Length: 181
Image 1: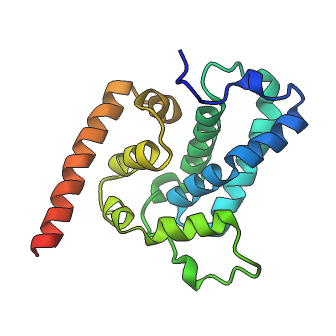
Image 2: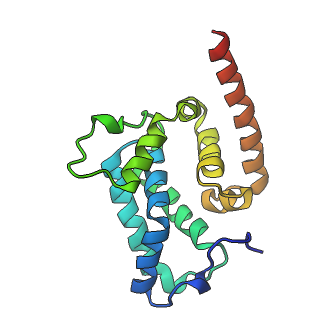
């Protein structure tokens, strides 16, 4: 059973080119933010976003629709990020978007990246273990369910719930320590 209100494949055109256009309009910012969260590099995030949509285009006809389109795209993006980053994943803080010469007017995606970077809570999240960072990001920033996170990360749902629980505890401890110190 799919969560209510999430777009299903049958709501999109069967033609991959037409579906791709709608996918990019609907999920372009989410894919870009996710890639940026994993990589911390705007240019690499753009490359990964393009590759994610290219893979979605190539595999559109074979996508059965067992998950929501959003979960499917998130899974593609997470896997691409893991492949590109390997062991370096999360090893660096994301670069400050203020220091980047955007070379054009700021788009919605760029504005979202700026807000994401400046988020005080995100800075605390980035100090947590990698598995906790991923669980919190996917749950709170992308608003995926624990089932969808399990699908996107190829982890058991119980493991996702456990990571979320422990991540919340660690985040609360960390933020309390900062307030006291």
